[in-house]
Image 1 (cartoon, rainbow, N blue to C red):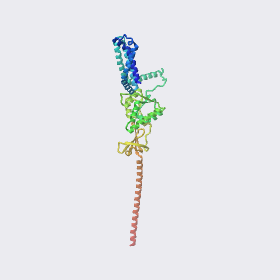
Image 2 (cartoon, one colour):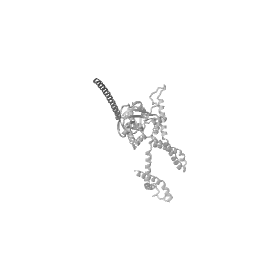
Image 3 (cartoon, rainbow, N blue to C red):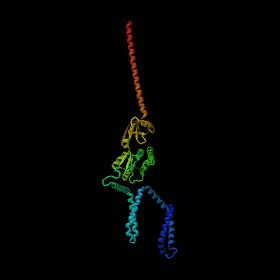
Image 4 (tube, rainbow, N blue to C red):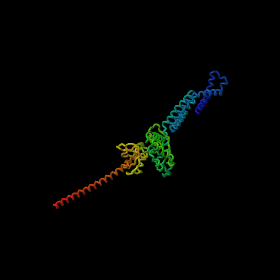
Length: 416
């Protein structure tokens, strides 16, 4: 299809060139008096035929160039294309306005200067639109907020009575999800409760990071990434959750956390995360952050000592003979003597738990070791009881022997 389009464009261009240039060629060659050659139909047909056959030489280079351009544009964000196109059109319009005096000169400058100005101003407009597109978005959002505040003032009467309820300054219409909070999974249940006002936003760069994690060579990371993608699909299919995606991206910012903060500043949203460090950076940059772990610290009760659970030990711990396991929500469980149960599921008894802003940590012991201790204490008590009984029996025997000896002595005296 592209080949036929290129041939047609070249043919139409050759038709225009033939009608425009060939009359001058006939005059230069002295054939202007030949009516069969020097007429518009023949000139256009000759130009059409010539450029049609020339088009076959340029089909492959033009097709390759078109493919590269399409690939490049597909890699760019829609905002980059939209703002670049708008400012390009603005630059061309400005160049035409400046070129009006040159159009009126009717000399060589009328044909040279306007194209040069169009190229320069078109390029400058395109660069201004693409390189500063985030600033233009912020400007448009600030203008919209200004108009909304003006409307709020109009809704107040002269006595100062508020005619309608306006949005508060601490209301954030968008709750932007971080990668860690998606993998955690509790955001789905939290959103279903209806406590999160506004819309839940999932940026495309967060989905891309989850995809990279799910393609990792590490089994644990791969499972966490796939878990996050499954949770996103479940939230998207849930009709009770107001969820929205955005293709907005920041090519000049490599880190996903910094992209989240930039996006939150631009749209006036709050970041939902489990990352303790991201929470601190958000507070420093005056970005509202909602930490799920802080909410769980307030609402969710601590794991009580003595409770039993089944975990799978993943790796060795930092201390001697410790093993480390993880619950489904990512909570770390430190198992004593757990190094002997790596890659195995084991029943453990919780001995203590520690809740911090960075997450929860549980300390536990294998259940059979607790039973062993109880059995040992029972055996020791039995041994003590038996030893006491043996000692008592020995004392009784010794007393009886002494009594018998005394009786024999008395009897001997009587015999004498």
